[in-house]
Image 1 (cartoon, rainbow, N blue to C red):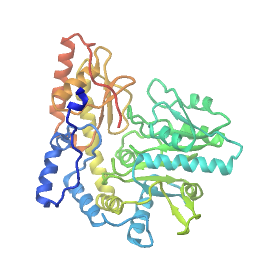
Image 2 (cartoon, rainbow, N blue to C red; image 1 turned 90 degrees about the vertical axis):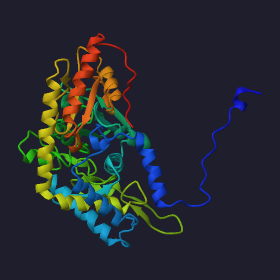
Image 3 (cartoon, one colour; image 1 turned 180 degrees about the vertical axis):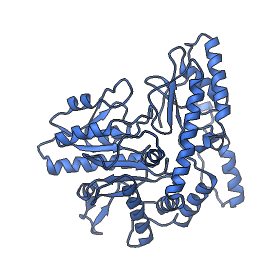
Image 4 (cartoon, rainbow, N blue to C red; image 1 turned 45 degrees about the horizontal axis):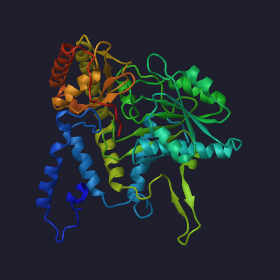
Length: 425
């Protein structure tokens, strides 16, 4: 008998013969979650964006009210159509869109980016039919969702090196434009180091060359406007910048809405029209969708609408004031550890820090051993924090553990091996 045949296979899980009560299932689900990162105690540096318990409850109840409804059917559910329209209108107003601007809600930043690339590709087919192999020009720090979209849509993506401060280089981007370039991208803020790209300069290049300029504000779109109102330095980045054609911004990040909710916005309705997909050659007749998805969960639309209206301008200003004060306190605590340094100039809630004298991944590994979920950046090597207000109660403990882990690594020689590897899911 072979070793393989002697090993009993793990039985495949089957549907239970009889259903279980919700009380029992709830207990099982809690058991399943025991090994999940404890984001409520600030142990996760990404994935969850917490404002306060009241906002969380508003999102939860609003989502539940419309969890069975489908935003794919606006005629059947005019309530969802109205709520989506109002979310888009508030977003366009917040992000200084000109008259005639338009947009849609999506399931998240990746879908918003996908639709922007799709719209730009179809726009180029109509406006620049001589281009047969369209290209997308990206700063090196742009989100991989652009490459993912390009892969699916038959567009070539090319990345351009950054300036020393980790921001996009407008001169290098201009030099990278070819006869096949249809779209340029800038980030507000870029995910790896949390810095603002120089959107005005990039948009000027795009406008001069007749290119589609997209701003990836998935991180900053629903926090930077409020941070600017609070007096923090925020460069112009939104739909009010001449030359910007589209902008993606996630409601389920610093908008504090339930997942998955994002927006894709256009400076002109005619550009928005290239986002849609239509098909008629089947028995049912016209099939028309504004986004990649067919079914569009009504709960996500309702929760976004409810949170925006619940918080209002004063609520978002209050939360962002707390966020920025907390961010500055984290930065001060990190900079108080001599071996560490902040990479780049954080624009909002992302803080990325590394070291010239030790292996920062070894520090991250030891932080994980103390119960902190590790999130790292590859180039340059760094620990990455995407702060929300769940991190404030944990700040003292985090900085104390960080200093201890740095000390441990330094005592072992600084540049020691680590099993941590940079992975993004």
